[in-house]
Length: 167
Image (tube, rainbow, N blue to C red; front, top):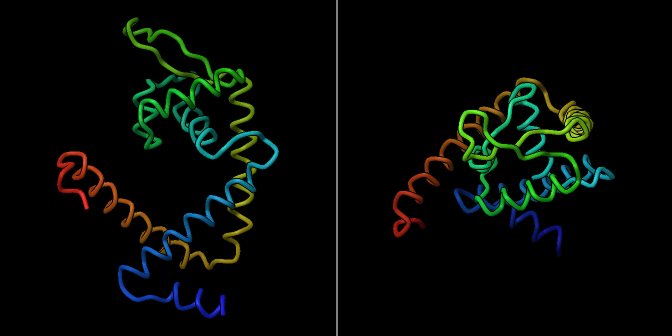
């Protein structure tokens, strides 16, 4: 009965089915990410923060508000992440050289090393998973997901602008 019910649950038509499948994809992606980072004592959010700082250019530091915007985290959520990673010696806070009233966040050498190791593991895991997908199919999926993300970003911005109208 469980397999039959799962098949019916995942095959619902229209928006109900789409969002059911998206929710299940989200859970599967989260489990995949945990497996890729296993043994590194990093959750995916922490890894994403390290990765953003690596991508920000060598020696470039970001404001916590910039990190929050990029990672879709509240100021309190970013503060918790930065506190946790700073306590592990992976990040450092310092005064913004252009405005001493502000604090910026940057990687320590250990943070860069761990971020690069995690990036390598995640890249290898993605490559192994996606080698089962035809490159043209992967491109179609990527375009569709990018379009859906844009729709969700627009919806989120609209909800922030008009909190009483969010559904």
